[in-house]
Length: 365
Image 1: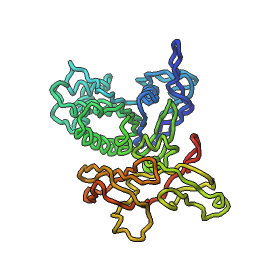
Image 2: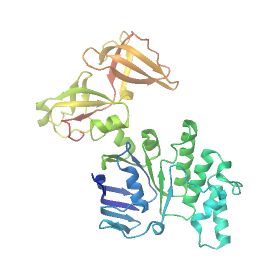
Image 3: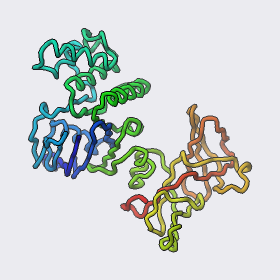
Image 4: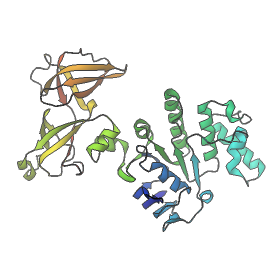
């Protein structure tokens, strides 16, 4: 449905700034894609380029097989691209009613057809009967539903969401994004969401695109990207990470059974091994570390450490464990009913295959 190739954007000035650098992205029809990255990575410029609000410096954008930008210019204006957009603040017209806001994108259609469609999408977003209200008479969550209804009303080919939940409180943000995701999936919409919130991006996405310095750092299914990030920097951006030194023996390179790495946690399986050997960094997610009382674990494999701090969140908790062989404390995520005292001696073991990285710029194994 959405195909982007070699998209670049440089903003002119005394010191030209490159916001996008040869970006390639594919979003299939009916897919929910999220564009994740820190401030300044180019994700908003990318969204505005898709919408037609920014003219790219190079590359192409195609929507449903139709090229809308090519050769460093827009070839189809924004209002003809079949794209609906929900801005960060909703951008509702305060002097118009809810129904008039939603019907704004339906100008030119017969009045009766417009009224029917407005009523239809109001029901769809759970605001039936509120069409006569003004935006200031609605809650923040209701205002975002109106903005979504306005984007959906013309039946666009692609719906763009520009951090639409960021201004809401934590509980409302979580409940509303689940509603929005289910609604858009039910109608088979093709969606591109821009966010800087890692949990939001991974929770909502069928397809996750992580951007860094104007480029796509990695793209794929959220689970694969989280457990097999392309490098240590991206691993730490996506969530908590324990990184330790490891070594794969040279002899392993000539054997089919050399897919293990030696580190402070012992001999660990490598998730996907490509024959490299030598010193490396080993990535371990805190939730993949099991913890037992040192006196209860007997001869089970693992490394002994001491609990130096703990945090309890109800459903789960975290431990900070000092291991003499390691320069930094190890973060371990445990179930909420697992209780360990500060000062207690524990044994840690790793339950899942790990990722290994060679050098500062090498790809994940």
